[in-house]
Length: 338
Image 1 (cartoon, one colour):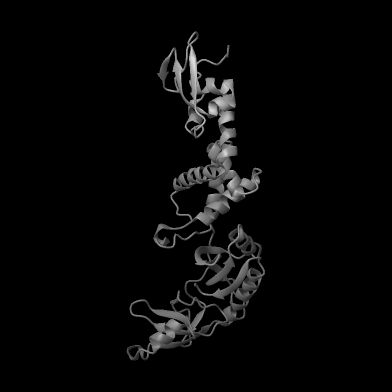
Image 2 (cartoon, one colour; image 1 turned 180 degrees about the horizontal axis):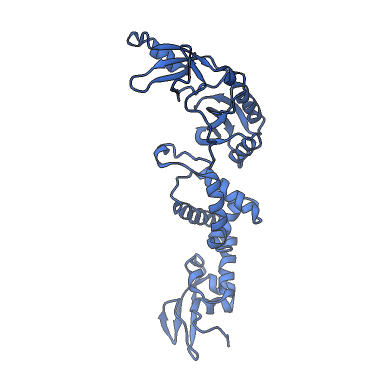
């Protein structure tokens, strides 16, 4: 006679006989009557387990039905051995569901990097290994949710207004220095302290040759002298006379100012696990504030990573580029967004 705890189901009963019986179970009878397999037999009942060689194996739902750890362990063992591919799909779905609770868009690559990082911390060799274990129930989502959320917070911050539907950009959480300049440091027509805006199309840095453009209603916009947008605007006869001379204040151009300026650059990389993290670490080591990072697949196993960073001047920018080019998997770095 088999001794089972109160409330144990027919599935528990089948697995208490043998793993093979439980795995091939397709139905059950109590006292000669077919009953649901989640029924709980009572003392004195005659139980018959119906099996089939063509059974597709246990259902994942059984894990939440069974009452004994023995049955649960045997079900998980079957899924671990027989259904790795399905487990990975199920595990990814569980993680995706968790991530969506945090109300920020994420890419598949980004999700896998986060899971791989968390997985390695708790002893898994790869993201798929953790997906597999989540999928067959070897570890519960509740035990990794907090760790995933912490890594998610470090990795993904995308304001809703900046999300492009067709790209689904990823963004690493960063903290902007408060003294990044949006105006100032520029002498316009011999006058310093003029209210200016730095053009987002070229993001001029101290050390660049600059020029001012009088915008309609927005004051003076500062461009790099060779900015394609500025050149195009000045080719229009209607804009004649709207350019003004401009240059950097001496303290700024000589690198004596503590002010920081926004710089944009594109990093062309070969896809590999952890490359976004390596870039973030390199910038952190250089004490460079990472303001935004968006990734776009370019095909052939390559990705373009667009960075917005804080930068002191052109020389500082060049040193940052040199460091990034030394990272394994980085093919090229160019100024401006791709």
